[in-house]
Image (cartoon, rainbow, N blue to C red; front, side, top):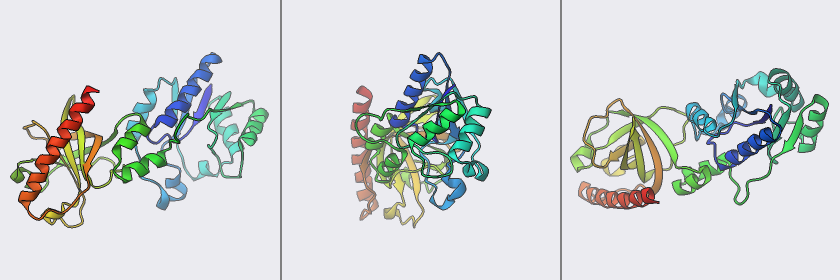
Length: 296
């Protein structure tokens, strides 16, 4: 079994590059490829206050990992006992004895096990003692890609940069709940969304051009994330999607948003009339962006 280990949040281009190398190594050795991931972010166990918001839910991550064509995926329960294992103990108890791993592929900057300052050469030495061939993965050519870099892009509202790093648009899923119905009065009825996952990252406040999936249908639309300062919404952050050319009831339905481009940051307008005028401009901008993207 040829494996690699990681949390794989976002399954970004760096992860995809590593996984392709695992598959290639397995093919060369006429063996199976295996991904080992965790059921929760390691920091949520030993430093929950610093655990990051996630780029992918577990379901999203598993779907993306399966799409890479890897042979097997093993979800490892991560708890304090697991966190206490040294790298050598992890390699012996989990990789060798539990999973029968013969080859471990790791990135140049990847570390696992209770920190003891190990280098790649240390991992390789442990492997020689245990009968595991430890192979150093090649770096992804070009820019550095990591889950942290993707998070920073989304927190800045740069969803185009995030898509470049991920290799696809960032997605976020919510359930439609009752809102204030102000959008309908302004001529732009919206679906007010509540996240399905409390630890899923929401991009920065502002307006976005998005594609909106409902069941098997995909709609062009625009999205606003923010506290709606023009309407005195207080400090509560709302997520409101307007589906172009849609007329129907979506309450209690799930919508999945694909973030294509940020239209503008959130701002306060002097009146509802000025806000309506801006929404009309936003709709024109979003349609131009989405039509261009779909043609590409």
